[in-house]
Length: 155
Image 1 (tube, rainbow, N blue to C red):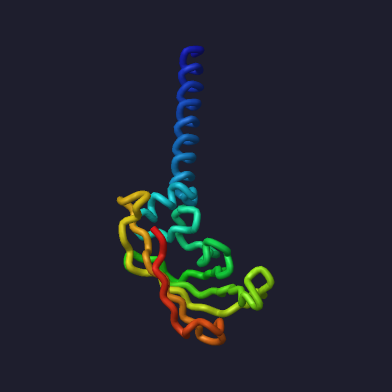
Image 2: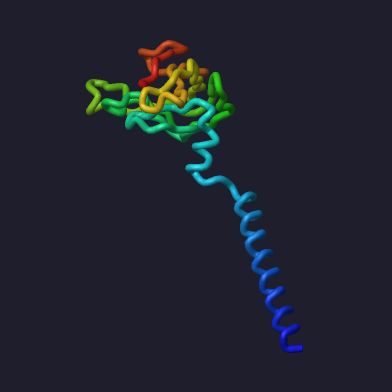
């Protein structure tokens, strides 16, 4: 009887351990991916390279004027992020540099953003990066800008 009791206890413990490990595996499979896992999954879609040479996917803000920060995109809300292009709406914050940039004032303009022309990224040639950005101003815009402006993006 003692041998049978010990066997039953051991089997119950083994089954409990199996259930716990199985639950942990199922929970980790159902949990949202970490930043690194998401980056690996996103590797097939192009990235946006920031001023510091870091790959970004769907950033909330982006500096356009890396040298002085006098033009940046903020409050970006991405409608799409695909293999050929990405689209967002947000705000372009631009310094009027009047009478000069250090004394200028920043102004906010609604903007529609399009990223396209994916190309291999020099830092990681297996990864594509968007190489062009197009800004469309549906309303007011900086005085020196056209309604639509297009810039090459750094690599």
